Amino acid sequence: MSQRPGAVAPREHAGMSPTRELDSTLSWAVADSWTMTRRELAHWARQPVQMVVGLVFPVMLLLMFSYLIGGGRGVDGDFKDYLVPGMLTMTMAFGLESTMLAVTQDLNKGVIDRFRSMPMNSAAVLVGRSIADMLQSAVGLTVMIAVGYAIGWRWHGGGAAFLGAVGLLLLLRFAMLWIGIYLAMVAGKPELVQAVQILVWPVAFLSNAIAAPDSMPSWLGAVVEWNPMSATATAVRELFGNPVAAGDSWAAANAELLAVVWPVALVAVFFPLAVRRFRELSR
Image (tube, rainbow, N blue to C red; front, side, top):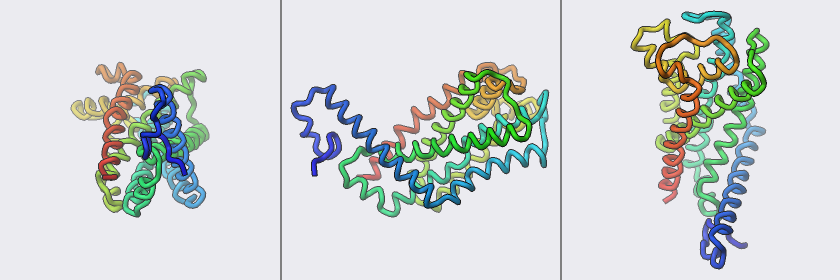
């Protein structure tokens, strides 16, 4: 069986121009990543309960905050119109434990070692896992939007603004995902993932997703306004035409800019860290 270019026998590139060599390497990387994505998608059919639980959990939180707990401190207008975009943002931080567990289980069961022995791109395993997670996140986001609409939430912007808001939410998820993948490989063992996952909760609730910063002590409100999740929540509310928490800080006034800058900066830091960590584990 012939070996793939750039994976095991780089000498096969002899005689190729640099451009053709790069195109060949990229095409194999894409093919390998899609193979790993299909592997992760196949797990959905074998473990449907896990996916259903992941979809139901944020819906339960939305209904609980909307009907049981209530709220709206510091919010002008209908609380549901403020809450739903905030819960959509929080949803982008939830469910990371399934991806983190999958990464650590593959490492500990020797699955990764088998992939390393094959002529495939070294980052394809992580990229495939991330693509599958993003697809699941898109499904979860669709479910949450439908439930929000069912309980009375409405968006008031146009179609482009709606798609822009969804794009910002998925961009935040992509950043959170690579943080989770890196931390999973640092943790190394499935039993340590739960401890790492606990860190998501203070980050998620230390935001303006549920309550306005004006309703908090001044020092806490300042911290909340600079939270990347607050930036996304505020930007999404603006695009949806929903109530936005009042704020005089630079972060509050430039939420849409920060909703792009924060995730891009986090991916720029944690994506190479995750890939480097994966390669170190393969030695």
